[in-house]
Image (cartoon, rainbow, N blue to C red; front, side, top):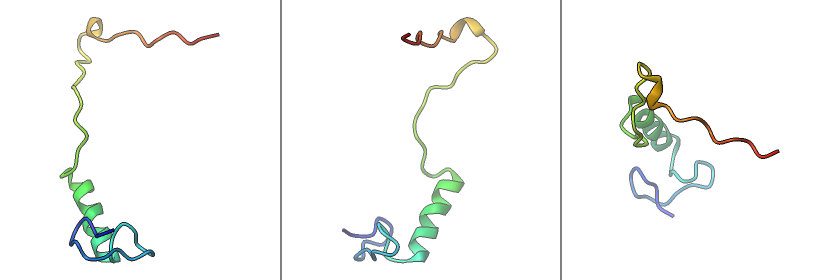
Length: 58
């Protein structure tokens, strides 16, 4: 497996990264918001737009 940051071989100690540096670079990307999971925004001002959660089975 290669490092997702620099493409060198990964080190088992830092897997999937090759070094602590590449792991820290990846963490910085997450903290800056470079990586994001797409989602729809919820309008909290209009409660009618919110759907009720599914009922729990008993």
